Length: 209
Length: 77
Image (cartoon, rainbow over the protein chains, first blue to last red):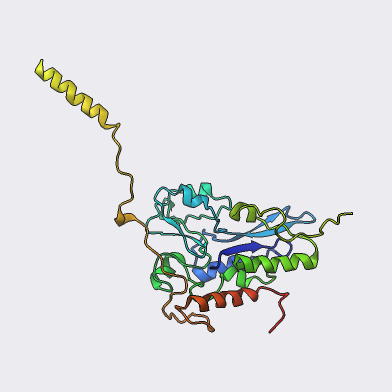
């Protein structure tokens, strides 16, 4: 069984915001809600890095733990989804999430906070796969259509990788070994736990004399 | 005297009511809905070619193949 994960390669991200646009367009995400965004560290300074951030579909998701109405669930593929019919828009998940993934649309004259919206790994929600109701509430279910998330598939430099954790980790490892640097995978430790010592790609391995 | 003791008893019951335990299970009417398997989909006109909808094995292969499209070190087949 696949375990879906995202990897953002900070060595490759050029801050084009193609992933953000792809997500917005694919799911008809309303104004003011950003399921994905690009964050730049040390902007304008030599060595600046950009990272595409969205819900990482954590192994031990803090949003699931704090939700007072238990609207979250995890699919067998490891995708963290939620039921918008149950969500009360309290915002607890927003405080718990280390990635700032939960978004809240504002409605009406007084800007009332609506039900939470977040990245679904393009896997929809608890409605019939590919149905109109699913599209209206959660956006397109690309996974059920045999596709991967639009953001990752649209990425021009392939900085953002999405798919089965083993496959995307292999792709990333090959890159790191070829270029000999940039082995840091931003957010992976927080989302999926720290890797066991001795595992994973190592750039510029230290030679023992 | 009897009235006073009845009143005291009722008062004690009312005061203790706050210490009671209420049922905290989520009623089924407000519980979240079950989701269907990721490879189950009716044709909506957007299904990617090359796999059989409803077949888990075929779906797994499709996603693996699709993920390799992100690998620019892969040998083209």
